[in-house]
Image 1 (tube, rainbow, N blue to C red):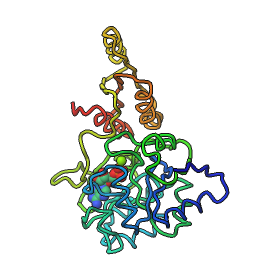
Image 2: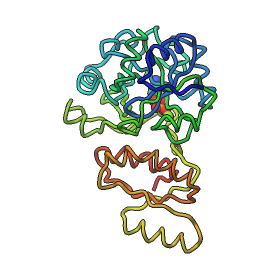
Image 3: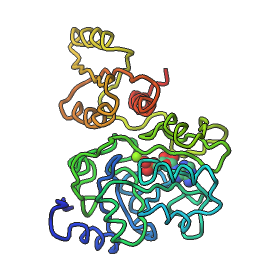
Image 4: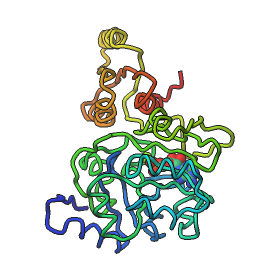
Length: 311
Ligand code: AMP
Ligand code: MG
């Protein structure tokens, strides 16, 4: 595995060549680092599942260079989906739509729908434009673990199991994309993320509903994004302090995680903080929940999953 500085001459070309040779390339995006394979390369896509230890029932997100590419991969796209695309692409919003025959079964777990997003990260866009095709890119970590927001996290998790890592520094948002199922009316929220349902309501006047019925989001597990240490959730900083003292008196190493006053910072720092807690051999992270609206919904979703607690 090689870590590539984007300032290196021909860095993007090297990634393109690697992808065309069926290699797996970890790339920075505005959400988290993704593990990329060419969207038409079934062998490389199967390797993504193997490297991540990801069940094949957990479909991948297709990443495209331009919003206009949507119609190559998707058909019968609803008015709501078009409005979401106009308002939020390029950006951290994924839509689930009906797929065309251009999408292989390996991406979707043989479903007739596909999840698509058009990322805004400058390097990802350059890569997609030079590639002249699409990529699939789940988070570049082992299944169920904390997503990577720096190149070093990818090295720590996947190391020699992949071919190349493009080091784009820290990811801006730090949380995965919002996933909206646009094959239902109204559209359903499959995963809270960087774009909030309030922003969607404001920009498109779409009232996204919660996911219901048969789970449309395979792999939306209660436990996910989990560090090795225990995560305990509390309502405010005072309670966090009380819990920390309690645990310290029992000889348990506890650390408080609280950026609840600045949600963008909370999202940006969350995964890095959880990883750092593991590196520092902390036993328990006491995380203060965010206010539940806006970006706070996505932060709390990840915190609940990290804590495996639905209280
Ligand atoms: P990740 O690649 O880890 O960011 O996760 C992608 C998520 O998108 C998965 O957990 C799925 O729940 C969701 N997803 C991908 N494709 C589909 C699809 N065809 N239908 C419903 N959900 C999907
Ligand atoms: Mg993931």
